[in-house]
Length: 422
Image (cartoon, rainbow, N blue to C red):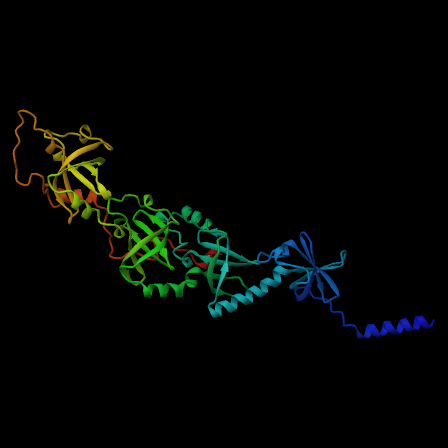
């Protein structure tokens, strides 16, 4: 009997000294210690009074099982309880959502950058998921390296480009976040703002930089470096005729370029000016009256073009094909055929070289040849000279503006509003 009274007294003492049991409420954020990590569940000790369970789907996408370990402190949200199992049902994901939203608000105020990975793409931009919080990177807020440079702003190709960025890490700045986390907007461009301004201030014409090809369009190559983007116009890709820029580079390729123009953030670049001018090289080897041997590269209404050193196109004018009447140039020469021709005029400064096949061929017996003044110079017909027409075929199209766009591709459809993107 004495033993029973002693036990009761001890029990009463322990009861009075023990902490009050506070049953967690649904939606409450509580702290606990990880007890055990199972294949798809995490068991949590809550205040030495309850055991809680975090199932796989409530782990979130910013934490993996590999990030967790026994005896590790953890903050979780109470979702309810399981009477049958005698466990609290907990969520690490939802606790982290609240933390993340607070963190995003602080980053928005401070301008601090962060790393995110897109999980989905649509025609307006890239979608980001942070433990269930949905964020968005609009197309207009991508840096030049990731901006979709697509010919004709083809929506299908834009989406294809954006889908290729899913899973890639993006350094971004929070430019909008509301209290409920329903409208979170990120900007990759804003995250690069300071480094871009610094790079732009230190840059000058004549600089040689290494960059990455970020876009290829019919009028040239876009190249990014130090957060900036410039254009290598088709006329600055090579000294020879360029009708397809994609033959000279691929997106993602590293190349060296020369800065040839700066106007605010519009940067014009050149690849060909890093090479010796082939006209100067040819002028050291060839002079008027020489005979040269090369392949026919193409045939036009004006004559045949020979592929000379350094990509130079030499013209055998229609009138220099044969002593007789030429109805079809292909009856005399064919593309790919190697022929010999005489240099009848050569002006490296104007980038012109005239060649002749008939000058190396004997005049047919009985044919009368009349010598005319400047017989080898194309005649002027109307307002546009034949010489100008030939130049238009040989030379690439000129730039319509002095400088190249650094940011926006011409006729590009920008991303719709962030509200539409949602």
